[in-house]
Length: 291
Length: 254
Image 1 (tube, helix red, strand yellow):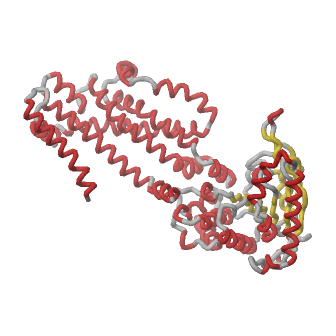
Image 2 (tube, rainbow over the protein chains, first blue to last red):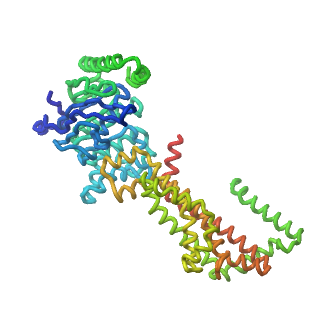
């Protein structure tokens, strides 16, 4: 399916162009008998300006996969290709947003300097740098807090600083690792809408890892469902819901309920299939998912 | 208000007790407090200040500053490198376990100096270890998420040290500096006992050797005051530099 774009009509020409390709990636920690196979064999691609959510049971190696994609971990086998070029170290066209906003922001720097950090080594004029910082903070609605310290802000606002930092970096693709898992439900809804808006505004591609099925369907053009570890791709489901999405209206659509149920059943079946020896993991997985 | 009054009241009570006891005991080894204070004023405020206090302060300042600079230059790379630590730690632990007086005679021979060069080097050497070890620990303790964030944004080299590694380790580096500063005062007195012609430690020893007990006590009081004031000064600097740290911890505690 061609990804649905709420952006301008001019964007259509780039739609379908392959931005990111994950080819038979596997990751094994350790070797011999003590080896842990985190990822068995994962392949999928993300098109330019597509919003892809990756869901899977807890502990299925989603974070490992994202770190491989981001060039922070080397896969044991397989390739990550960004515009056809192999990723071996963190590329300048990618920005990563972690779940632990409190730990990825620098408490000794103001909001401005946190957002500025990755721009300092880019070859930009001072004005351009400041403009990027201010534009990104404007986009996430934090302009009045530019000279505050992160710890003076709420959790949701701190995650918005992390998002602004990623946007100011001007990546082609944003990698997000369960970015809204540590905030309350109300804030989470706001942040979901924020990321949808920002995606249009900055014409950005997003690869979004979550364990929340509702979130994955609500946000994305496509949901990739992973199996329990060692991880493989179980299904790729096109999300054909209209844009702009709305926390109430979209979630009331029969299509939403249908898609959500479909993804949910896939994951549920996955958990049952994964066997009784994983009963403990299963318990935590169910707890993590929204009923 | 009551807290400040209590803080001042206790030392005043101790001083009063000291005065009462020395008057009562009338022991030549323990001159009256009033005699010591008069002596203190005559010597240090300020007729001999430039002769003895200034050289001592210069030695402490230079030795301590040197220790901070060397501690950071060695400590940051060691904190970042596991191999570096494996190679360096046994040596650091060995020298750290060495009692300073054991090295004092040889420091004079090795440095061909009984002047400031030997004294500053000696102070710097023993002040180095608390700063060095705390720098290594502080750098090692940086949150892995923050390290991954800087890596993913391609922040490297000097920029990473300056903006991320050093600030993250700074609270612990300051803890090391406070230990080192009190060591600096100890080392200052110790070096001035040997082959010296100036300094507060020198005055202390000469006064004792010539049975001038009031000047000796005046020197002891001065060393205590100096140590206290230097520590206050460092705490003021720390409060300024680490203002974020107090706010951050207060926010985290909520």
